[in-house]
Length: 105
Picture 1: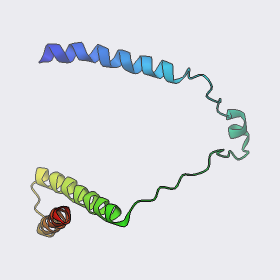
Picture 2 (picture 1 turned 90 degrees about the vertical axis):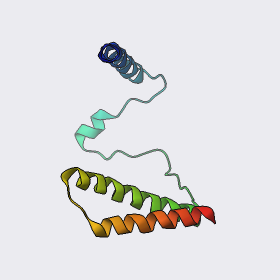
Picture 3 (picture 1 turned 180 degrees about the vertical axis):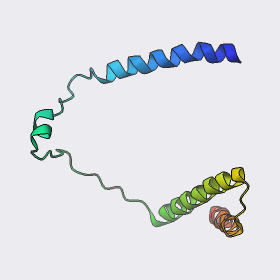
Picture 4 (picture 1 turned 120 degrees about the vertical axis):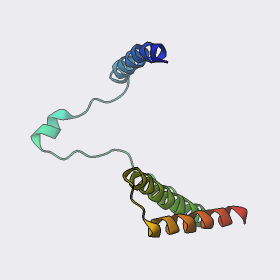
C-alpha cells in the first residue's frame, strides 16, 4: 500500500505542474488588464450574466437535500466530539422522510 502511495505522489505532482503550465499558455485567451487594475480604473465584464430557470419541484427537492447534507455534516462533527443533538437528529429524520415520500410520488 505504501509503495503505491509513493509511486502515485510523483505522478500527481507531475500532472499538476504540467496542467499549470498548460493553463498559463492558452492561446486566444485575453491577457488580464493589470495596468488598469493597479491604476484604479474600474474593470468590467464583457459577458452578460446567464439566468438558469429551474422547475419548482426540482428546486424544492434540491433545497431539502442541501439542508439534509448540512445537518448530516454537522451531526458527524458532533458525533466525533461525543455530542448528541436530539433536535438535529429529529430534523434529519423529518427531512429524510420528506425526500423519501417525494421520491415515491
